Image (cartoon, rainbow, N blue to C red; front, side, top):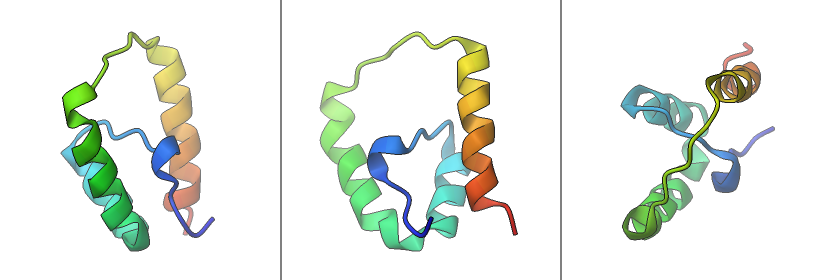
Length: 66
């Protein structure tokens, strides 16, 4: 995996965003444009904590598996 797809990116906090940008610098312009364009139409969904933790654990394997 060489590129982080914006549609599959869940940013949990500023540290998570910075880590994603550091790991996949080629996606920064696309990610930032997507975040900017969606800020006015942001919808908040309720997520089960276990589902979010499972997803986050899976995403970590690709980026930080050196």
